[in-house]
Length: 287
Image (cartoon, rainbow, N blue to C red; front, side):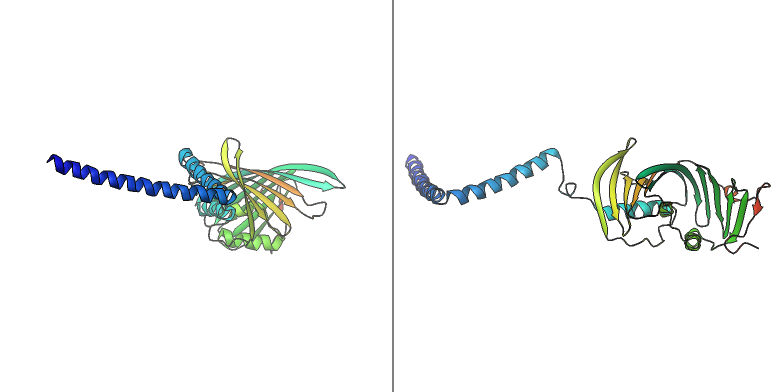
């Protein structure tokens, strides 16, 4: 029994020294290669070491590879407009700062727009501030406007649903108010834009937001979108126009406040002509 154990020990010892001899040989070859190709070896080694350190750092910090990639500004903005466009009812206000520039002098005027919406066919917009006091109402194909400072009002027939009605009104008045993007439904086609840029994260008040820049032919728009994945609402947008006449704002900054828990009823969209206002012809007039 003892002789068998000794025989096994001798064989194991010979295998060990054989492996050790091979190891010494390969170590000798490695040292010789490093000596001859010192520069290339350390360049390859440093690159691999750098990648390893980066990988370990990401793993230890809990950072995923996906979160380290730049976000898609176009998708963020689309998701936001799709969300607000799918709301059956909503209420929000926008504080708008319009900056006009004449001969190098800037003048800023402020007004507020209050919006009440009930899809698919009811919309109320109240514009006030800086001498403005105007109310617009869409109610199942009936469009009315009251301008209190001028003591006038007008009525007209328009398409029944909000999207088609806004298309008709904006075309008649040759206008495209940016806040319309928050009113249109998610089914309405959006203007095609080729270039977006994700600018990172920012705060609106205490709300974390994604910041996206949109490049159009004659203007750029920077949009702040809340980081809430369930409610990715637009909270602010700044517009800079390249070349505009003196009576058109060169810079427009709008801060949006979304109102939660507002009770919206059909009676909110009923139109009643004020006693002190007189009717004027308007968009073909309503008979």
